[in-house]
Amino acid sequence: MTDTTQRAAEILAEHRQSIDRLDAILVYTLGERFKHTQAVGRLKATHDLPPSDPAREATQIARLEDLAKRADLDPEFAKKFLAFIIQEVIQHHETIAEKNGD
Picture (cartoon, one colour):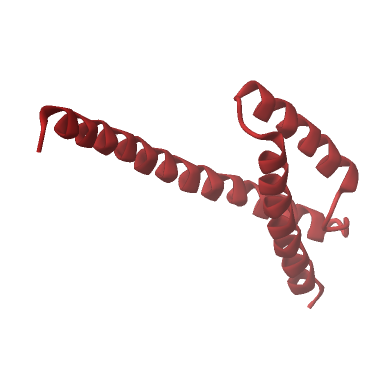
C-alpha cells in the first residue's frame, strides 16, 4: 500500500467514525423526541384533542425547511424526513387515543 493510499484509508476511517458517532446522536435524539411526543399524545388523549395538528405541522415543516437551508441540507430531504416523523407521531397519538378510549 502506498503512502497516499494509506493516508486515504486513514481519512476514510476518520469519516466513518464521525458518521457512526452522528448516527448514534440521531438515534438518541429521535428517542428523546419521541418521549416528548408520547407525552403530548397522552395529554391530547386525556383532553380529547385530535391526534394531528395540521397548523403545527405546517409551521414545523416551514421551520425545518429554513433550518435545512441554513445547514446546507437539501430542504426537500428535510421536509420528507420530518413528514415521515410526523406520520409516525400521529400513529402513536392515534394508538394512545384508542387505548385511552377503552
